[in-house]
Image 1 (tube, protein in one colour):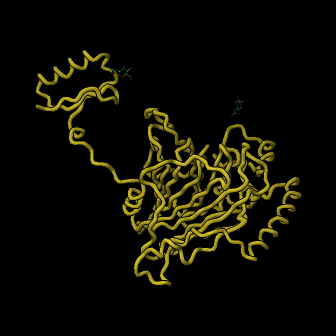
Image 2: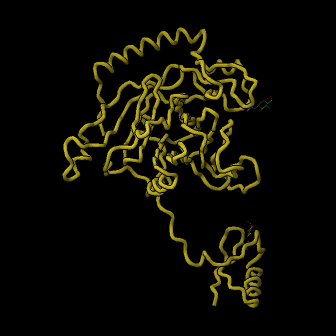
Image 3: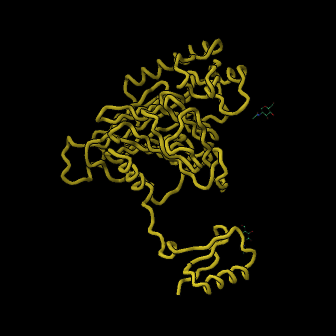
Length: 385
Ligand SMILES: *[C@@H]1O[C@H](CO)[C@@H](O)[C@H](O)[C@H]1NC(C)=O
Ligand SMILES: *[C@@H]1O[C@H](CO)[C@@H](O)[C@H](O)[C@H]1NC(C)=O
């Protein structure tokens, strides 16, 4: 992990930024810096109901009506977000790599980056904004990049996990991706190196990092977006026409609409082109969240807690990406033999006596079944004899 260093240029940038911020404060009382952008690229600054011009301007955002359905009228200005105040130079001789036997001095692929971010002076959305953040990029393997943003001064909840861990190893070959940081406002660009292609570009919208409201958007290279859940999706490929999907394990059963069901899957695969080259994005965050997909094409995450901890996984095919994903989160388990057998289930058997009766009736009819379930609770195991 590189340590924080300030070069002369960075100090100059910080000072320059400080004076620009002062000017921006002056200017903002007149009008937010509203970018001239296609409507498809607007990042919604008022995702909750009842937006109005007045409430929008209070947030320092831009208000412009549109005749197109679903296009947000209130969208972010360029004055929101964070600035990079210091950045470690990519570590050219990481200690992780030195452990490897026979590694030539000039062959070193680990290029972790650390940066300190400060919130730009802009009105808050919901309060509780965290002023100083740490950004950390870990080039874990040739195909896997981790991007993490946390509170610089206080620990926050992070999903504990037995499989998803920091790597102690180092990439064994040249990276298939390249990371670019933009400073002011802070943004991330993840490029595939061959062919050169921008995969994940957060400069489309601001980073918002408040105690109970975290938001990040990214422009994607194609509309072929699959995944996220758990919901009933009408099509495998996502509709990118301004759809918002909640992710929160409600234990609701499939009843239409965009309702969230049982599972929490903040993961999608994006197919980049006809050749099948793809990448996956996994957000390691278990808080209630929602994801908006818009026609840029772009994705916006909004979550109410935790940290922003992304893994970007590259592959030459969707299968290779899924392989990278299960390498990260753990492979599927081998199901027990009996679970593959015939099972009976009913919403409610009423009583244990009724369960026994049903089991007995099936035995007498010679049905080779192995379990009886009351809704999803396992009640009895009856091995075929
Ligand atoms: C939006 O406005 C309606 C009508 O005034 C009100 O009933 C509702 O509670 C408002 N919703 C929110 C989230 O403010
Ligand atoms: C079966 O499930 C229903 C619904 O969850 C529950 O009310 C009932 O008590 C259960 N019955 C038994 C025998 O476990």
